[in-house]
Image 1 (cartoon, helix red, strand yellow):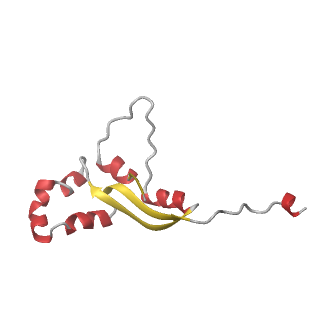
Image 2 (tube, rainbow, N blue to C red):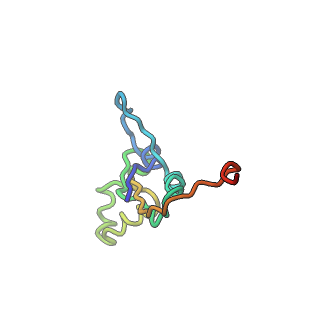
Image 3 (cartoon, one colour):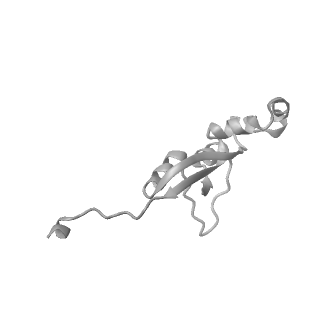
Length: 111
């Protein structure tokens, strides 16, 4: 299981302070994370969690106070709907390591 920030949500819908000295940031989106993992892993599940935003329209969509009446009717399904839409701050990946890879044969191996 791996967790990382969802670049799409962090950059588009949130105000994040600049990196501190020596801090590196390399956030990925869902497609990039899948591509990185698929080299050595079978990706069993990839999803987002923790809908959170403090900028733009998403700030309103994720407003706790504005969501209270909706949450009173449909409960936690509201948060799950946002997560299924990829609006979670965090990407979660469940993946299984494949067996050892065999390097491709070269012409030197054939001699």
